Amino acid sequence: MDRGFLAESVRSALEAIKTNKLRSLLTTLGIIIGVTTVIAVISVISGLKTQVASSFSSLGANVLYVQKFPWVMGGAGIDWWKIRQRKDIGMDEFRALKEYGSSFKYVAPEITYRYDVKVGNKNARGVEVVGTTEHFPEIRDQGVKLGRFLSLDDIRYRRDVCILGQDVVNTLYPDENPIGKQVRIKGRILTVIGILKELGDLMGQSMDNVVVVPYTTMAKFVGHRRSITITVLAQDEEEASEEIRWILRRVRKVKPGEDDDFSINSSGAITKQFNDLTRTMFIIMIGIAGISLVVGGIGIMNIMLVSVTERTREIGVRKAIGAKSSEILSQFLLESVMVSFVGGIIGIFLGFSLTKLISTIGNMPFGMPIWGIVLGFSFSFFIGVFFGIYPARKAASLSPVEALRYE
Amino acid sequence: MSNLIEMKKVKKTYKLGETEVHALQGVNVSISKGEFISIVGPSGSGKSTLMHILGCLDIPSEGTYHLQGEDVGKMNGDQLADIRKKFIGFVFQDFYLLPDVTAWYNVALPMIYNRVPPKERKERAINFLTEVGLADRINHLPNQLSGGERQRVTIARALSNEPEIILADEPTGNLDSATGEGVMQIFYKLHEEGKTVILVTHELYVADQAERKIHLKDGMIEDGG
Image 1 (spheres, helix red, strand yellow):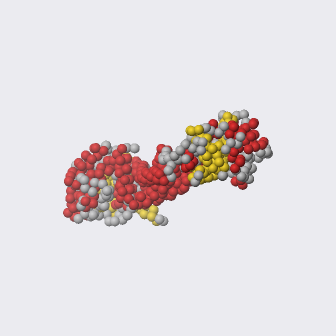
Image 2 (cartoon, chains in turn cyan, yellow; image 1 turned 60 degrees about the vertical axis):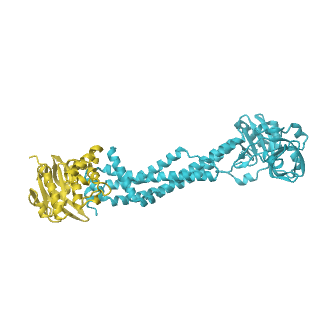
Image 3 (tube, chains in turn cyan, brown; image 1 turned 60 degrees about the horizontal axis):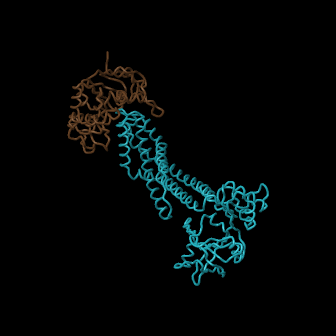
């Protein structure tokens, strides 16, 4: 296209938009809302994904958590009732995995309860008390920063010892070294032998509000039984998962053809499940955005038809002085694309601000992928062309005589 | 015989709903280069239709129309647009200027469609405005100009692609007689410079200033074709 002609078309389109500021703004509202939604959804989900991925990576690679329930339940084909009916996972399963497993580096049970941990009149409420074995540090990649961890003898002789997480230390022994001192859990006196390395937060929850004890000791003060977690450090996640399934299906007498009645969770699996979940959300939101973009497009078509009618005489003059149909067509098409584009730019700006706001309020990482912006621009461009073509063709096909005569 | 305009047995028929309107019923017109012609006749006589066909805004239903030897009657919309751009400058009764742009930009508009480079456009536009006596109105918007000044901008616009023919439709219709007289002098000057000027009018004192009058009545030429 010739530069002079393009410049004239841009000038004419801007003039039309400027003359009808309010009308143009109202017209682009649908586009603005649509593009804002697209940008905000893409940015928020991509921010969430980054956060989830980084959070769960702290759970360790190659660590499998054998549990009664999956971490994330969602997607099609999930039979909630059946999952609720599952048998508890207990020490029998742990012993079987320990005895028959060949592809694991380490296996450990984790029996977890929430109890108050007390010293004198100080009380750390709702601490996660974990009963486990000496392999916990290797599997969880979390050792002690002071003192020592559990030994085989602590387990074997059911010693009344414990290792404290940093949060518990902060509450109970803020000013002194707790090693060798005692704490009380459910009336039982335990001696502190170490302090765990700090892990920080996972999804806004502290991972250091924890006390580790021998699982054998735990059995002494836990009244009722409940399902436990078996943690496995695998050489290879796939291979270990298959072996766990093979062993547990036999131990738990799952008939051939039936689904597993246990779940093997891992950080990789949860990321995948999270992605499945957000995909659905994503599709729904894009659908909503799509509807408002179409509504916006119809708005543009409507206003362009009005514009063509209002400027029939101008079209006649332009044709009389030598404008070809294709030149009238591109002039009006450019106008609708520009209207749509202005909406797109406002939408991108609003979407950006909205994402910034959400990430500030929700304390999430701020991520706005470039392809989101590209998508916003392409959407508004496409809408402008698609819904502008009919009015533009109408303008282009006017006969010069009819157009000049139009009152 | 190499006339600039050669129309033979031109008929134009419109359909107005069920009825057919025979606006032109076999018109012969020949105009040579450099002539100053007026087309006169009462309303409904077919002068607008004749002007549209002469100006290549429309094509005849029957008959032939040769402009500079080219058969215009068989051309499509884009070819006609090209012919208008090259050969014809229009002056309208209601001026039809773009309201949002200055006088010089209005004059430059046809040059945009004729792909004249931007720098040259402004230069030429100013020259044409000077020629019609508006050197001091270059940057005025149409609503800052008087009726006569607007009509002169329109004439400058018609001249901007240096066409062979200036075709004016009731150019003085919206002007008082003194102003109209001024506009007529410009047409006369253009004629003297060698342009072919065709005026369509129902005002006899305007028509009388032309070299030749073509009288139309009921879609036929009474006199002067």
